[in-house]
Length: 220
Image 1 (spheres, helix red, strand yellow):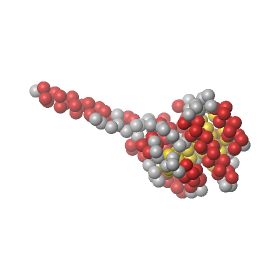
Image 2 (cartoon, one colour; image 1 turned 90 degrees about the horizontal axis):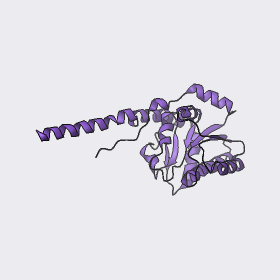
Image 3 (cartoon, rainbow, N blue to C red; image 1 turned 180 degrees about the vertical axis):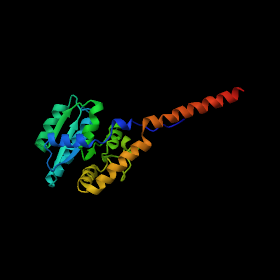
Image 4 (tube, rainbow, N blue to C red; image 1 turned 90 degrees about the vertical axis):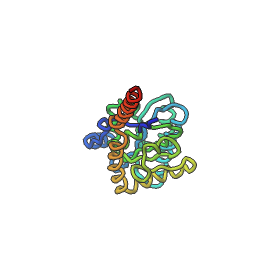
């Protein structure tokens, strides 16, 4: 049995300063920090996860933080979530719908923090994509996020049994620019070192060659 670490093509999810500047200008960001979340907006844990991020952003605004929540994704619950977000965040939220995967790096690049709890996620590919693009991640550690996010190095992970900590973790990164930059750089390096699919699947080739070699030797 050979465990192959999940991976992506990091070249498809790179930090792009030109896109960051262009999108921030088009969104009229001003001094707001951008919190990005992305999910299929379907009933169940995906919707609950997005609602958690909306709730946190609402609390952050009450605490005096200037934030813009950007939500990428589409689904049957989009209208419900948009109404909830408008009630709690007014003009400090953007729902962008479904973005082609080849364009996602531009939106990751524009954000300051990626936040999504990842409730019951076996593995959220969005965590790989966000980190590869240079985004520190805030998530729950109870499920798949812990397989790809390094706590205190590339993001902050908290227990679902203490949901308020998820919001506090976002606030920690909002108020600590040095920490965000350190995690941004560490996240990019982490994905390229440990979650590059081309590199990781070489292990499959090596394992198969080893098995074939042993089989051939035994036949002799």
